Image 1 (cartoon, chains in turn purple, orange):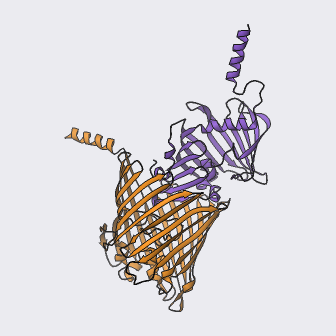
Image 2 (cartoon, chains in turn purple, yellow):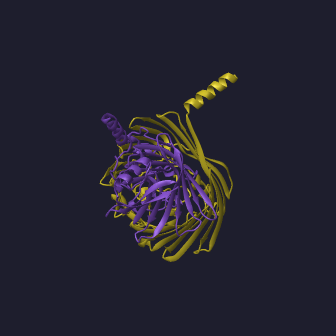
Length: 251
Length: 374
């Protein structure tokens, strides 16, 4: 009998990551959610659509990432921008422009600039800031979104953190740590962007949303969508991949 | 016969795993007005660029890039030697060809890149006509000794290539040692070495060498930021071999800042010690094949610009340049409009005002450009 109980307890403890009765802290939830979309390393192919009431533009790119420190983005469409590469190492970022064969160091003020006219910033693109390290986290409620029970967590940037937002509110599923919604507020606490994540899929080693929709609140008819057309996690990438030698060679 | 062909095709596609082709086609009418003699010039240029690249393996790659232009109009007709000037190849091997020309038109093709490259681990050797871009600043690049260019030549961002060899050895993720040898159309040899590294959030470079067999040179450049604003600069010091002329110092320094709404402001200054007593020869400055020694027409030059994407489709910018030594200035507004993902319409104006032979003078050049990328 005792043996059975022990086995049952063992099973419960191993399948519930943080154990029963042990409340997860907001930071632990954010860390899990961040880990879900980052992995230790990843390779992705993405398609971004900038949608405005009267027109639409498409951008396609490939991205390689390792941890939070290293990433490379290679533009594949449109042809005018094709071959441009963005390299991020820790807090530094470079842009390689093949037409002029030059690598330009991107200063932090440029990170907040809209990326190629979209509702995303350069910073969003390469995940330069970390939702784990750069913010203080607090659980502010629970809510059901698309049939998933979610925590609502508030992220307030730490002082001196190189971030764009004054506050972020995020909805994370209790099962699977999937982010389903983000609200981005400016420094005056006004809601600027609403982000909805959908098309939940099994991408090989994990289940996650593969479509992002970003809507600027005060601009009706505008939105930016981002779809992962291919994503693979835990791919082996050497540190030397994220170098000025390789930035000229990625395809 | 057929079998051989398919075998060849198989080998070729197997070996040349990656072949790429792209380019653009532009149509650009231009209008020039000079108030000193009330002259006007109407011209037109059809400009096409073809880029081919092969990558056969991780080690070997090749590229050929060609520029084709059909220019006709009043400038060609009225300025003696202009046609020859714009089609001249300044490289060691003449790869420029005029297919046809008359007193008011010229059809020219020039191969401005043709190189092969071999890479083994951290070593990269590139032989042939190529671009070596050593700039750190945004407007004037005293360190860019091999491919100095005129800021005003906006329609040729690729710039001419140099004929020679470039060896790069990557010593770390953001550092490298580099050596370049170049031979120009007068058989003059330039040789230089560069070391580039990253420290404390800054990119740095130091370089040294011999320029056109005439001057020894050394230089340094940096690129980083101060409180989020880009901060960069370059300096090159040249010592004539024959000691007949003075040493020359050319230095630029600048910065830029991007606001949350994507408005970017930029400023830069240039000092060129050799341009103190330069004749006020604007035409020469505007059209001459650029050299690091003639980046401006006066010793001090300043630059300011603002660019703002009014919408994601429409980018606007305004640049101002001042040449206090010769009481002249330049104003250049531009507009770029995206008609489609691959089609852009641009308007570019260049206004020069100042004094020529102590008389007030000004000229306006304006261009309308339709550019299709493929």
